[in-house]
Length: 208
Image 1 (cartoon, rainbow, N blue to C red):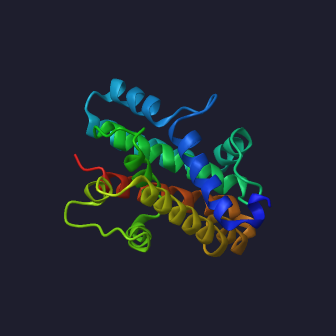
Image 2 (tube, helix red, strand yellow; image 1 turned 135 degrees about the vertical axis):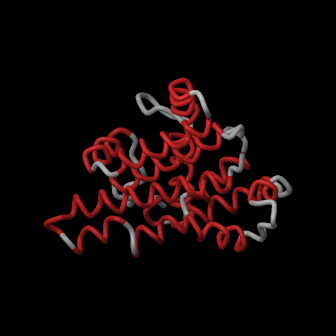
């Protein structure tokens, strides 16, 4: 059965691509560590580098040309629109870069799960709750350090389901259809806002 007919397989394919390509990098697509180190070498201070990484990704994802080009470079499953999949890849890389600049290991499974959760914003806590994990006062990282690997897999699956649901109900693609003549402008604006929000949540999860 193809991914497009199997929601669980599609959810896993989406989150795997965000991590394996968006965060780790592939071909000409730079990964989180490389992007973070480039900004750190340029700006010296990790927090200044984070601010510039966020600004850079907001600018990139606001460009419809970038989204179309990246979509052709690293494609998601056929049921996920190319411009939306490109947005997720960029946002995953952003969250991973922030994690690296704050001293976290982006290759650890716990950090990767939190990178994915950052894409959900405020609803990330709900995804954790549905997987049986409650965030205490010490935050997501402390909570996930105590759970077994199978729970992390379940959390990633919940994130994938939520992203797909969001794309089908109130995502960028549907919103641009409401204003077809200004679709590119509207889409770019929404992408930029959502990317800035991902940066905010990544900084919240990956504390200094």
